[in-house]
Image (cartoon, rainbow, N blue to C red; front, side, top):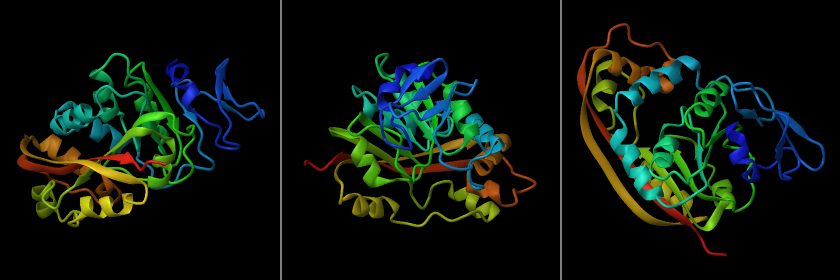
Length: 268
């Protein structure tokens, strides 16, 4: 069971006490307990899954895109910036793709994949034996102990900067990936998809300044030949899936254009 490797990192969502694993349940000293699902993840979400959680269909499309290697160069940069650090949290983990890339670079690394979607947690739990999958809300108090992590990954995902700072060790790293305006521009132009506003990395740096120092910024930009199936999956894997998907998507060359930033918690 993967959660046994990360149980010392987790905290009770009710009282913030430490959690320990016993007989298929996580429990804290005050008696709060949480069943581990048969698929290997634990649900620490207070309340029902929201309507905008990633669906199984969205995640399946994302996984096919990732298997096709569309985002492999981005994953390589994320893994490089994380190398030599453990434990690692991927917040808004989806399939656990970027967390798995970090784990692949070092057999000693363990990680937690956290997502509000149960479908995501099921996939993440299967991604690597060293991953503990947790259902929780990134916007709430993270069910993780203070200063328990060396890396937090936030790749195309929500960012709770105050909580990220709380759970990171003093010399830990927050590694965030944000899209630039030309990211998937060909698909957005051809199918009238949601726009990507400019300045997202600069906005993140400004918001993070309360909690973090920016220590590294890299632009990852390249082009990929996408089959019709991959092009359709690129549309179906993201927020456009909550709207009407185009009936016909043709093979095309798409641009991947993102910023990867690394932040260190402010001292004290």
